[in-house]
Image 1 (cartoon, helix red, strand yellow):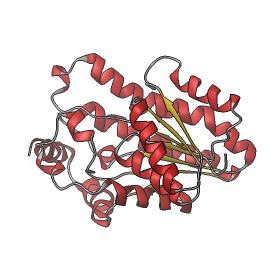
Image 2 (cartoon, rainbow, N blue to C red):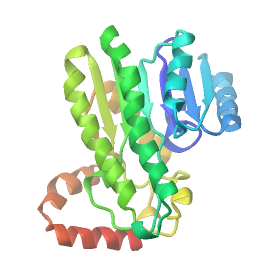
Image 3 (spheres, rainbow, N blue to C red):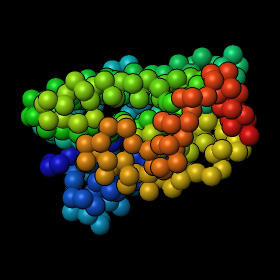
Length: 257
């Protein structure tokens, strides 16, 4: 396999669109998600159109040892990952004290721990080869506290901080790390988060456009990327000056609206 991209959460949304974009650019794929039938269908669709190789790994990454299992399988098959795209994640709407811990604990596991372990396992190979690109899917949520989506917002703040720190560590080895921070995107996220009726999510960007921006930015070696300039301006130049209590009230109003 050549120019291989490993994409987690590849069965839908941004991850699925990133698979198409990478195939259109002539790269091979390792697609990872829970839904094996959906992955196989995507594989067949891609291979019918593009002359690329596609490997599917159907696995629940939150299960103990799952990330290592993915890594070991690719090592055994002598597949080098040139592009690591950590896309898998989910959210959950509602007051934190009303959530069941299994859901929020699983969210932390997938959004934070799996992303970190994936990076930890595949990064040494990139450093050894002195080339490689990592794209972590963050969110504008990472710049704000999120009353009624407290764990999700906090998990994306972790992704934002972690990605920037790792990018600085590995820059001298020819490896880049990009964190894509989109606003609301038309994906299955809202169904799983029970957030379809939230006002701010009704004006969502298309997953294909967001994927294209993320992919291009990853190849350009950019650090923190937004899908709209208005979001860049708002989060970098407006919200830092808003008093914390006011920002919390605005954030809660947006999530309730």
